[in-house]
Amino acid sequence: MNTAIIGLGNIGSRLAKNLVTGGETIIVAAKTPDEAEETARDLGSRAEAMTVEDAIAKADVIILAIYFDAIKQFLVAHREALAGKIIVDPSNPIAPDGKGGFRKIIPDDQSSGVLISQLLPHRARLVKAFGTLGAESLGAAANRSPQRAVLFYAADDTQAGEVVARLIDASGFSPVRVGGIDQSIRIEVGGDLHEYGKLGKLVSAEEAASLV
Ligand SMILES: NC(=O)c1ccc[n+]([C@@H]2O[C@H](COP(=O)([O-])OP(=O)(O)OC[C@H]3O[C@@H](n4cnc5c(N)ncnc54)[C@H](OP(=O)(O)O)[C@@H]3O)[C@@H](O)[C@H]2O)c1
Image (cartoon, rainbow, N blue to C red):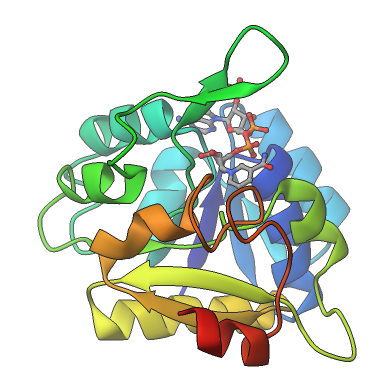
């Protein structure tokens, strides 16, 4: 399975580092080839820079480390090329509120996971993952000891979920499935299992067992 990370900002760059540290070989892609090449150089021989188009063509698992609105546009723009792929969505449907905070940009009872699942290309499978912690924690808490921190994920397709659970493990966290994509709201900002939601902290797999 080839894994590509598209978008190399706060989340994409940290996730790329965590995966490479865990021994994964990855493809990285950004808006410009220069940005992807610079990131790949910093990551070393386990990372290869590609254009977005080549990354989609080569990868089986495509992690869209970009904002919710950009993901929606991306799924439309690359619809045919994304057919049959495992698409990973870390998004939180929020935007700056102009007062130094953030506001949810979709109705309170909706999740970006479900909305994105309605836009999936033919035979593509969606896994909601890598968005349950803030970027700082995603970087700092990888391979935490003595007990690893959990990254929750949601997936309707068991096999796609297992593929991403293995990546979560390789990236230095414990994977815990919350259920299908309809449970995404629980692991997005404001949800009961999000660092910036009712949970408000990192938890171990043991602690997560009673929460899920
Ligand atoms: N930051 C967090 O703490 C956090 C925590 C959990 C989940 N998330 C989620 O993770 C996702 C990424 O957030 P982030 O904070 O990493 O955002 P970010 O720092 O803005 O990084 C996103 C990067 O992707 C680039 N990009 C946008 N559209 C692209 C495209 N079509 N192809 C290639 N690259 C593209 C952006 O370029 P431009 O800047 O030029 O547009 C930017 O460099 C979001 O969905 C967010 O909700 C973030």
